[in-house]
Image 1 (cartoon, protein in one colour):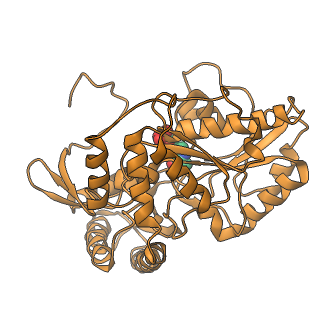
Image 2: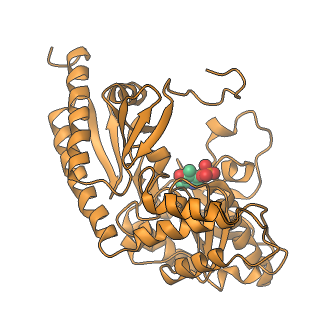
Length: 397
Ligand SMILES: *Cc1c(COP(=O)(O)O)cnc(C)c1O
């Protein structure tokens, strides 16, 4: 491994050369079924012909002009996101953390512009993940990631995920917003109950707070609806998107209602790269595919099938897996042995997954998979279960 890279990642000893649909191929020709999707990013798999075409056509025309000028593809993508969500306004960023930062700025500015400059604090949840910038780390409040990086960003109050009593008790006259992931990803694939999401909406309306959803991981079709909060029949005021929205091209977005965005006047926020023509062309192509008739219904159907099969696997292998969690194609298996060992063993069996907190293995396939890929993944999982059952001291052997 190269000494030239800052060693912040414990990387697997694998280098991929090429991808095709749900598969990745190494330099030495080995094939892997990719149920990690670059951490929920390759929403349409690898080398999707529509995305390749959008990228290469745009790549030959124009890459970057800056936000000093009109970017028609970006205006079109914003209009389509607005037409398919609660939102009226969109700001494009390059990453998830930037989208969360943008969402936080929208919320604070809203109160400032509505005569409540004292309302700056944001309530966030335990085991959340919102990114790796200083403000988003402070928002999530995970001490493991904050340690050693000096003073935290001020203005976040942390409460237990799912606990409405704690949340209500944390509201003060300085509270501006509540920031929640409808399905926690890094935190261990923990879906909020639909009741909790509805109560968040109610409490925000009651106290004049803005509701911000971080759908960076659970949005863009991952749960079988375009946005995970749709399952609860409510809408946030502001939402952060990234990961799957670009299908592998780096991009993020802040979506907001007209009211919530009312403080964001010219000059109040900006980005050099965000919303560039290349990203916008790919983003439109991703949306073209996701909005096709039946696409999301298929994600829901295959997600249910995969979850059923995983539940059978867990029932048959209680010494390896404790539980299945999640919705759609955002699933988690809580492991009994160390999740990192299971992820490594699955990799040896040709299946890529990704770890999360609470000793969970995240299963985040591209949204284009069908029954054949479910069968293939279960085969690898069953082989790994057999290996761990034999070696586990409490196992049958
Ligand atoms: C990945 C993620 C982020 C951060 O996105 P980056 O693109 O890595 O900055 C924020 N929130 C959630 C829920 C995520 O899953």
